[in-house]
Image (cartoon, rainbow, N blue to C red):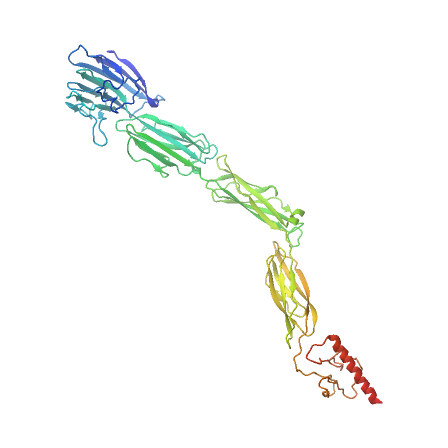
Length: 610
């Protein structure tokens, strides 16, 4: 292979390495790992997973029958790496490694146009170089590094890397056989987008970008309300010191990120260390240093803010017949309040009321927390069925669309009801007890009830000859009791009446009344009280009758009234009456006694005239 040969290598992640390769000196052949049993690469867990069909080592040919040292030089020139889009890639490292072992008297020298870094130094301070370069390992940090062996069976091996070189040479000197290998440093990254409760056609994309802004991995959701998209594990070329990569997410198309909560990040790293973004205060992007061999995976979750729409409904009765009560021949309008109870703007706000018909809203766009008032355009007439049912009942719902999306939202049903008003009042009175002797009034217990469905105000109980008795306002179904003091000058039947004003949806209407009859007894006379006798003006006062049990009337001469003339106690000098005992006398018996007495008196006077 003494003449230059073009080299084209397709690498994982869509990368391509191009170079001109020249191999001079002792012949070599491609060889799989491990090149021999004592080699470091490919044994004891060191790069043992390389596919055996891949032969990355340049291994010197069999030295049987030869003497001295065998020198081979392998050079890559005009090195360039491009991505899948053909763009030049920076920030990667080319690796040179001892693919066999550097024993006593053997050596490898690496040269490049970029400084070298040793890859055998571990993070814990140890070094996997072992005894491979016992006679010297020099030049790290420069463009020339040498490894010279000093033992027959060394442990470890030398591995070096140069950052984005354009030339790279490995010169090996073998006492027996020696081998070298070229390689690149890689890591793996992935980013996943999780969408929760998305709106309609909303979509988000995620990406991983290098320091130059070149995207090395991308993925996007497809507009499902609950979906995800992932880049999967993507291999990226990195330098020996690692690369800062930017993980990011963004809305796609007309997606409005204000409809979503802050993105929530969750990241893991395998193979390395370092802080990772976490939680919902990261923002839309995060810079993450990715080291050699790292596997960094992030999930970014976008959760839609909740939409919400509520509706309240209120009846507006119309007193079409003007009687002050809501009922037949009246109508009712409906007023609605639609409120954005969610956290996203709403458009196309409307109210659907199948019974009431068309509804007009003051605004059809609502910011979170805002409300609009809507009204029916035509009042609903009270039907006969409504009157029978006792009320007019109506149900409606509101609907809207989340602004900028095709996602709809509907309120819970809102119901309003207005009762058909049927005011009524009833009154009940208990028969009073016999009043005490000498009493002038008797207490009559009265109960007033509101059996209707309209509150009653200005309630009062009326009894003839008695000041009206006020009664507290009565809600539907309530009752209350009062006591009315009724005069007891004589036994009689009186009417106990109640009047109340219905206070309905339109205010006060015509009063409602009810009444009941109750018998009121006369009072018992005071025992031992004297009985007055009839007098005739201007005669002197009469004298008492000789019989204390039956007093007889006396009359002045010339002033004898005709029998049965005048009303008792009247101004015409007619006789008054009194009871004969402490027991009450019925009205008929008292009248009969007076007439009989009058007849006796007339008979005596006739006999006297004779």
